[in-house]
Length: 117
Length: 115
Image (cartoon, rainbow over all chains, first blue to last red; front, side):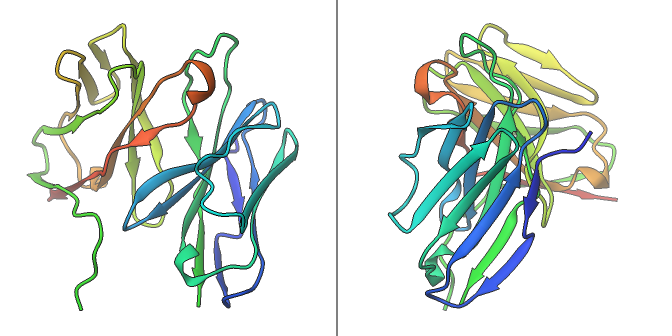
């Protein structure tokens, strides 16, 4: 089975440029998460969607960050304009949340490694 | 100058030994716990999970123990192999309400297995 698919795997961009990261969750999963990993702060949740609807975006650092999920099989995380401190690994994860909120395994993609110079 | 960042605990073991990685969690309301393994350049890989109504769960070569009284989680790896070398993260979650999926990760433990 295909796992969570992210693109690009690596991106180097100049400060001020727009960055768009893409994610395809595991087929059949109804919840999608964007996490960021840095040496300073470890793994942090940025935003998550349930049935394509953003549920909690309290982890999004600033208005420069936005995320969308136009359909069940695709999500984007956009940074505009990008800054050097946005350099990190951005992970997308997905799960199938059962009714009633029972926790299920959350699977991660391989990450998008972003460097802003 | 020296970079500032998370200083991860480390565990070094010999191949074939058993490894125990510990984790203290913070939220007494957390009811779902996961152990992830992260190899260099890769995403976190699910190892095993446990719900708060259990205190032990076993997988293939791995066992997770949960002590809710002291909010402690441990991962035991039997007959550790060089391929087990990675950073191991525990994560906690309260599965109810809008907190679902908001995994709170521990800082991680670096496991190094020597042949």
